[in-house]
Length: 189
Image 1 (cartoon, rainbow, N blue to C red):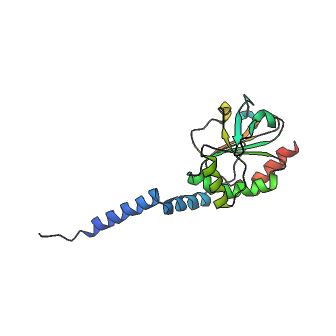
Image 2: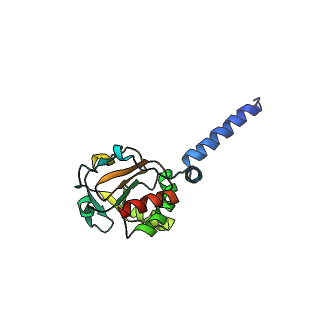
Image 3: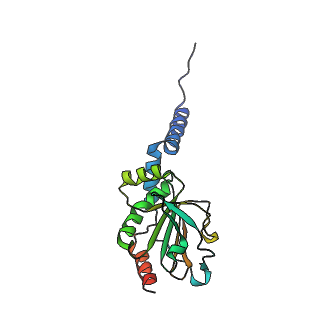
């Protein structure tokens, strides 16, 4: 048999395909995606008052890891921060440290609901591994129409009057000074 030595361009193509496969389908790739998301995050912007929508329903039911059921009705008249996330979502993972810092400072002023479709076992293991103390929930019923998204992370901020004042799809820096200033403004209202 006469084996030919592969051309340099063929070897480069194979190396490139292996590199892309490594980024897409390995833990190293997940790490890279998380780090890239952290590099490109910005402070979230609130919705212009004229474009804000009032929640159509407070009947959304959730359950926490201890089996305790809550509804949005339980938090009517309070600021509510709602984040839809999953343990397998690199953009979700990327923004969690900034959310943890926000939660640590505002948990007594704002209701935080971190909603996942993961099992509580998997979500709690993730929180422990990442050293996070965020309160996690699963949906029991459908969320209000104003919070429907087919993409995660999806984060919403509801003011005390029930207006959705922020709807952010994708990663954000939730611990930025500008976002904290906005929160402080809405808390004082």
